[in-house]
Length: 102
Image 1 (cartoon, rainbow, N blue to C red):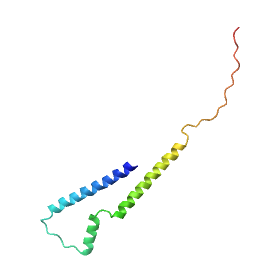
Image 2 (cartoon, rainbow, N blue to C red; image 1 turned 30 degrees about the horizontal axis):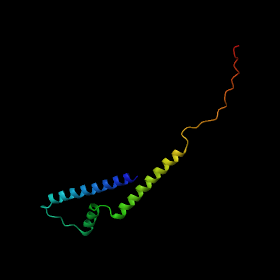
Image 3 (tube, helix red, strand yellow; image 1 turned 90 degrees about the horizontal axis):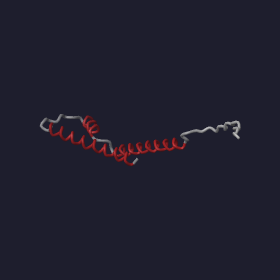
């Protein structure tokens, strides 16, 4: 379970680093172009789209992920309690006594 959480955190970090790298490359490529004049509302909308999730969203997603993992583990545990093989009691078959040869 801890491995899954660490893997997801690493993936998120890789995504953030790659996004930052691509933005840096794009910014350097567009550095020679004049910046357009944006209204404050447009600038706020643009910055909101470019900035990654805030920390509260990050931790909420982590908590949701852990809760899903716990539910999966509990379901597996409940399944393992049930018997895999059901045996019905069967009456033994009565055989007639065998005759012995003298």
